[in-house]
Image (cartoon, helix red, strand yellow):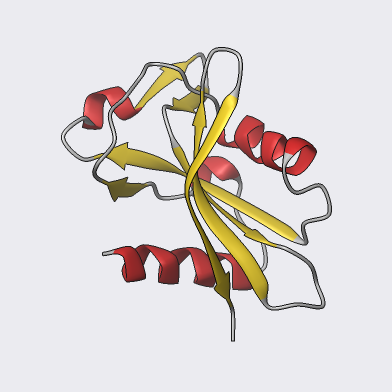
Length: 122
């Protein structure tokens, strides 16, 4: 399962960015619990660029459907979808094959990154 998710994110990072964040299919992950703090994908990607990887070549985030908590994994506020947790991948720079993948979890006053893994495109 972990390899399948990593493969999906790697393919998404390798393709040109064609769709908007609302076009992205969420992934299902287990071992997490909803906490009712959330953010939109656009806000999540902005947070990653501004506070964690300002020099990143590409940033891609998609929503996470938490196994057993589908209804609590996301919600609508107006026309924006908010996600309790997001799966993000970052291609660190244009001259390297290095990247990172992680779960981004917005909280009331901070953002938490966990399940962080380094990877290479090659």
